Length: 393
Image 1 (cartoon, helix red, strand yellow):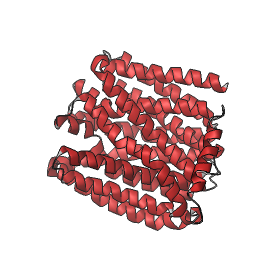
Image 2: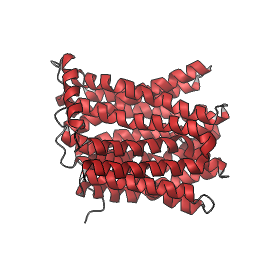
Image 3: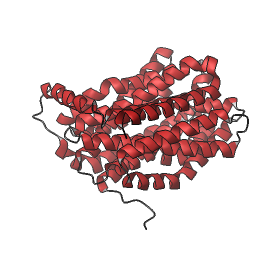
Image 4: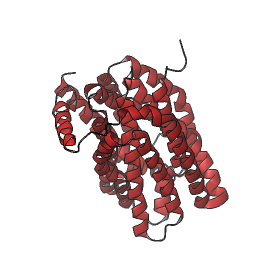
């Protein structure tokens, strides 16, 4: 039996571009909540800042979906990557709060360009195992997490944040070149220059009509609950570790070890989702997320480095499984509309994370970290139970 699951060429190239982009971004993103707190942001404001990043993705995703009909998606992917580079450049020259917020919005628009177009490329090709392809795609950030934070920490220590943002900019330029070379030609077949804007409304109406069915909607809602929980962790997990008494260096070590240990586990998850139905991936993934989140909050007085590591491995496996299952499901059920489907699938992730960050920012003051994670885990478990009953799965 092969150690590595088989990967198709287009999946490989899109996954590599995702990895390179995430490597450049994750040079500094792990420290972002700490960076915000150091700049005087309150805990609720940390949550609001993530809302500011993710909402532009939701707003611009449908428009990017339309552009994918008229412009080679690989070109839009490249523009998105360059937007990430411009964000890194802008962070160097922050002069006032208004300018800071502008760069966050720019990052959201750039993410919409990259992720909508990347998903459209994957959904527009006759991939044999869509769940497995998206599992590769979604596992890319874990591979970047294994080394990027350590490299970023060195550059921050040696050159301050200016150094890490410059390095991120250089990596974005390299990634943009990679996308043009390897994605432009295969993605050209998806361009339909005769596509009219009036057709967008009709396509979305047909998509939403299909999404409302019991075969799709319950599982999308289950996956959305997982993304809301992910928003809790995106905004406050690092601050939870800091409040737990961990130093920044220990948080860095934890992040790198978690990603390194998760690499072989992600390969197992990728194989697994390739052998089971999308609905099963979503259901089992959400259960893992909910259970391990409840454990993290409940065992707070017994937690140590090793226990937190095990819990986060389990939760990460659940996130990967649920996310790839959702994308695989809608790519199969809505394969006639890859551009619009790519936009809708892109909307779910930032929308869930944005509302998760907003909700957690509102309740963190009186719930605290432990009850926040317990509350989030129970919410996902209940959503999973209700969703499966609605679908009679």
